[in-house]
Length: 465
Image (cartoon, rainbow, N blue to C red; front, side):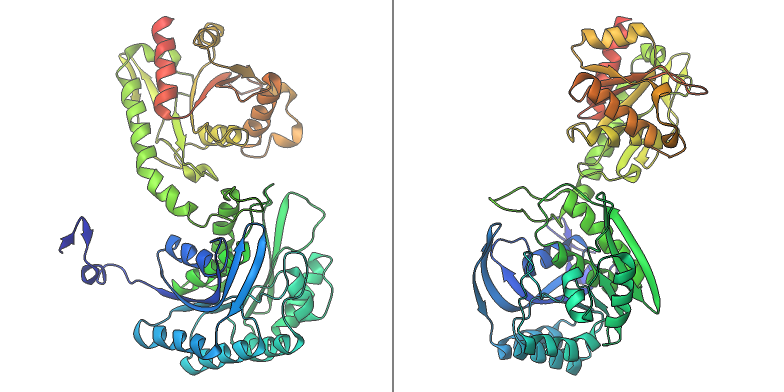
């Protein structure tokens, strides 16, 4: 293989990885948060080659749309033709189609080229609830495009229009999804089904005669511009890579949920989701692992660290910048154990190596995202005092006060305890300890910006005891 400035040449990559090609047929968002701009970012995050056929040019920002110029249907058709006949298409995402002529042209062109894996996001209703399509365009959409869709992704308002029925519950959504499927789409995903639970975002997928209820955490943010665009393009990317519809939808929902959590707080209105967050975390993995390795090296080089090892041993962990779960936290595989001459790591740092330290880090990050690392120590009053002398903010929680319903749920003790510790001092602490409970060892956890930082605190304490 040959390299060009450190990268493999494209002809060498062909034998190693087959690049999938996904076409977005949609409008342009000058603010970069939705439309083809969001689609291309999503495709890049999925490592597929993104292509576009622009249907309209919009002048918009986070505050709203100030102008729209539709593209001539013949030019739209020519864009699709140019892409298909040279590069090829493994999946299609369809977004904004502003009138019946454009809808008919796109449908005709897709049918002519027999394009696979068509994901249709029917942009019919604005965020404020205003209908964006004329009656003739809605008719063309229903009759011409729906039969070509592998997956249709209407929000609740759009599903009510297409299904000619109101949606007030999950059961309503199931019934409407099945009704819409009779117009031809192989699968229907209704987004944002109304629920009484304010902490959940619920979608309903109907495919192959079966309903699937999909739930995700509802993040408290207004930075959700482009959510529908990113979701539909993520589904298309997943389908291009050979996933089933169910797999594609589940993967896309996870992708978008993380993008919402990391939404960009830009402009004077609701900011956009961040579809690039997965790439940011991938790039961060090497840095995190290197940081944990360096922390382990520091700990192993100080024999006095054996004084701080708990009965359940010791571990050091560090989270990715946009960590969601334990799989996004690197720690020492097999923990750090006490020896006559100090402390030794039983394995190498890897992601998803320690649920306990990961849950503690993730719980604290709900209050302060700068806290990315954690390290557990044996509990001794003199260690707590030494940590205070370092100028660290120290707090605690009492496990005997934990609600019974939390005790059998993995991760809930640390989540509840961290919230109690924050509440106790009115800020996010650098140190949280508890005195144990029946069958639970007392413990101290250091919480800092990096694994090296918390390891350095621990070493300083060990030397001072």
